[in-house]
Image 1 (tube, rainbow, N blue to C red):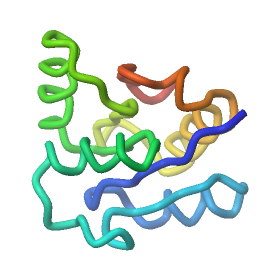
Image 2 (image 1 turned 180 degrees about the vertical axis):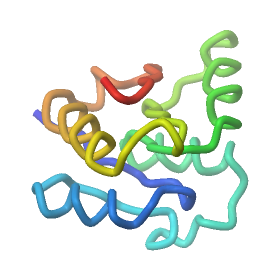
Image 3 (image 1 turned 90 degrees about the vertical axis):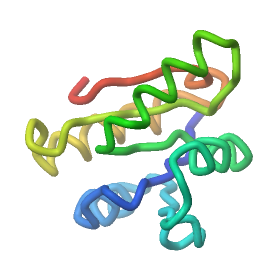
Length: 115
């Protein structure tokens, strides 16, 4: 049981490195060629990939809540304000989500970090 993560371009690279060191499956929007895409495209792309998106961009929260209200599916969203969460807290929380859930557990769920 696990879910891959899809990192928005706002996320610090130290978080991605730390998760990979812990064996978490991580893909960044930079690696996927989607870093310059708008937020709705990235959320749609995460759904296509079956990956939970992690972001520090509060605009994703508005889109996620809007999609929940209209019944539009997304693969899941984890959000943290970058000034309220240390790199270590982000890694710890995201590792728990990634290793303790699968795609069906996270579908249409918005996680607020830290857990």
